Length: 318
Image 1: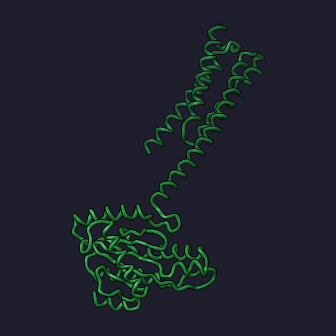
Image 2 (image 1 turned 180 degrees about the horizontal axis):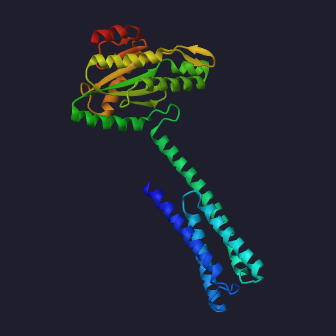
Image 3 (image 1 turned 45 degrees about the vertical axis):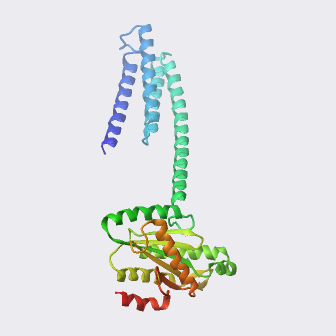
């Protein structure tokens, strides 16, 4: 608010200064005006100085970032131009002719300045948008808008450092789409991409604000859940993720049911570093794959749990 108020004050001062100069030019610095008290040489010098000052004010207004200053500068110069023309017609004097030429020149200059200012601003906006896009690409997966692998591991490392201070648990979930290659072969890569994109969107809806999801590569999705207080709550969170995945996926008017294999590793029980925790969850996921897919495996686990039995397992854990 202070910055905006200062902008208005500066603009108003510029307008006031410009108009005072215009008034002085009109009434005192013109030899054709009977009210003028300067001789010919003095009047010419003063007119030149005041006209240059008016031009500087116009340029200053145009160079300001705020909107509307170009219009103000043009209106001020139009006012001076009309005033000079009326003076020349009324007194039948050419005293104001240099001023008329100057005002026309200034209007042309500030119009060009404004044109290039807008062009530069547009280029700057495009560069800023490209920079944001590149920054997004550096941290996010372009297909799903989830974190990419590097960004996911950085977030995981940061969360583990916080959990070392609080002593809370963190659950790493490694999820792999079952028979993803078959989906691509039968329905095309478009279908596979759509399923991945939809799956991530659904999972995001059930995650808490502090949890994170990332695409680790291909059809592999990583999720970490923070501040896990007991195994019953962890099972509930996994069950919610499982339920949104089990909903049919619509692809070109066809309803497809898709299963996933899930591996889970918990900090600090099985690992205390991002890479180790991710590896444990990955191992658990491959164990679920080996046991027939569509299963949930906890590291270390004697036997992965079939997805359809996990609800009963969750109730037992609670």
